[in-house]
Amino acid sequence: MVATTFLSSVITFLLPLFFRSVTARYAPCTQSFHQLIADKVNISNCKKLGTLGAQWGWKTYEPKERRIDVVFGAKLHENVGWLAWGINPGKKPQMVGTRAIIGIKLLDGSLSINTYNITSDTKLGCALKPSEEFHNMTMGYNADVEFHNMTMRYNADLDYYIIYASVILPRVYNISKLNYVWQVGYSALGTSPLMHPKTLQNFDSAETINLKSPVGQIVGEHRHHMRMVHGIVNIIGWGTFLPLGVIIARYFKYPLELEGWWYKLHISCQILGFSLGMTGWIIGLWLGCASKYYTFKTHRLYAMFIFPFTALQMFALLLRPGKTDEYRKYWNIYHHFLGYALIAVIIINIFHGIAIFKPDTTAWKVSYIAILATLALTVIIFEVYAWIKFRIKKAKSKPAAKAKSKPAATSIADEPSSPSTEGHDWAEES
Image (cartoon, rainbow, N blue to C red; front, side):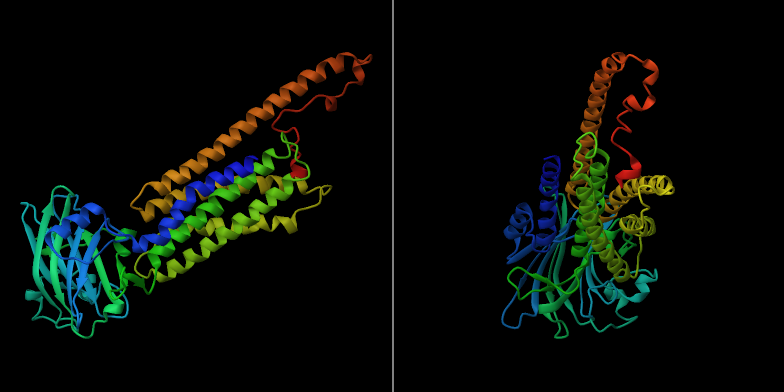
């Protein structure tokens, strides 16, 4: 009953996150943003982008479909900042090679908007200049993209800075696989935007979209989506089923006295948790290999500790000494100490991963805190029940001891042990 209730709570908290991760790629923009742009321009599609709280609306024109009207909006939280939207004719959606529109909020409150060519020199730290100044220095293969009717405005009701523009694409661009990027930064030197923050959301602000699709279907790599799957699977596997397996081993033998079930339930939880956690770990390896320009060393070091030692714990099914083996006591000490240490590191790394991911909603952190609170409450209830059961048993044992005619015959073994050891013969538990 306890396990069923707990699993129900886990499903209740985590299923909304899973479905949100699946549908986030097709999430429409907010009603207020849609209404704002509908009053000003004729936009047929509008979606909320996966990072930086940005939203994007567009309309393509028949029959050649080479003109796209674009509306892009995001918040700027500092006195100086910039937001950018651009397209890239290359094979992947990336910064280098992008032709971008960048709107800058200057220190005096005025707004500036220009087009920019993003090159490998920009990535190396060279100043990013408007394309009118940059055009004579180098000509990229996307230099013939045309931007018209560019404006940048601020909407106080939404606290959004919004870019409006019309884009004329050359034939090198395929609108069924259009690579586009967006970005937000918080420093600029005149009309030259400076480096954006180096967070995961900033690095993941790129997609490939099919503009011929009615909903703007995302095609190509899905790193942002896979990060969500990585987080959810690890929360369920490492962060939920492994601690639940420890609770089962600790309390289902005593005080619940489920002699025929506790070990099977313990092993089932650990195998399921390890399988899900290993899946998330493999996805994390893939994400690490796909992320060439950044790495999260602390998160990776925690993962390097968690996986091999959790695998070692699973091998305990095959390698543990027999109940009568003289080394069983030392094996128990290692097994329990390592298990509790792993749970602590897993919890720390899950919160660290959520901090790296920086989701637009607090549901991730709140959901996992609720899971941990449920686990903690379960432990408290079982501990209280164990102590009550111990005190009752101890109270019943005293009259029986006094009734014996020979007190000397009473041995220490007749006295009940404390609830921390009653029914917890660690040599037989694991």
